[in-house]
Image (tube, rainbow, N blue to C red):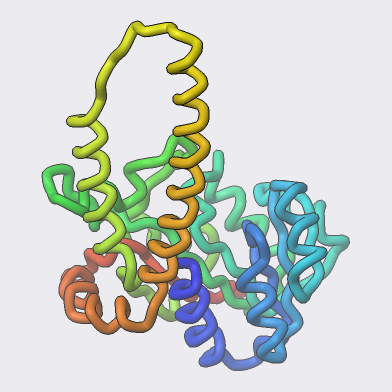
Amino acid sequence: MLKSRNRHALRRIKRLSGVDTILDVGCGSGDLVDLLNRRGYEADGNDTSKEVVDYAKNTRKGDFYHGDAENIKRALSNRKYDLVVACQLIEHLNDPLHFLLGVHEIMTNRGYLYLETPNLKAWRPRSVWRSRIGGMYGEDHRFAFTPEALRNLLGLAGYDIELMETRTYPPTIMKELICQVINKSQKQGKTSSNQRLSIMEEENIIGKVAKRQIKNILKKLYEHILESGLTSVILYIPNKLSERRGRGNHIIVIARKRI
């Protein structure tokens, strides 16, 4: 999903005029920053995790800064950007409005904001796959937004919305269906045992190591399949159908700083 998200962000960003400098807030391992720099932009990244910032500095193209997203100016030495990117970020924050107001201070005049967050309107508690989307899962999700709520928040923070869309990225439907199947099989397969024999404990340790290795191989294969072009083609129509009536599982907004 990350590759699909980055490709879509790049397509949208390329359509914006006057954008040279970009900051990705909550950049993680820096994949989008690296992609933007390789496409001719001057892109930097910021993240609250020192570990991922150190990793990005060593493996990705661009400058990376460690700092709190809700006090973003403090980490950037008064730098200004034509575009600020915040993907899958505001749902984690303590105060999204404070963050959006703070972004004004690191933007150039009439700078752009590219924002993405889970779409609460996509959530359906009794749906096979929609019950796990819409920002309604994850212990660190503090907020969930509908498109209407996000529009109101951005207006309050001093932004003019130029584009708002909802999107379901290619692997999502398949991934969530697989997760549902796995969760059900795990519940059905749970067993308890009170045996304490040392021989069995040793066999269990060996078995766990083998299972872990097999799990890692299957995980890599699974991720490769999900990110493949064939999966995108197969899921194109289901994805488009899921986006009807603003119910794609992510909200994407391009907004501009109001003067």
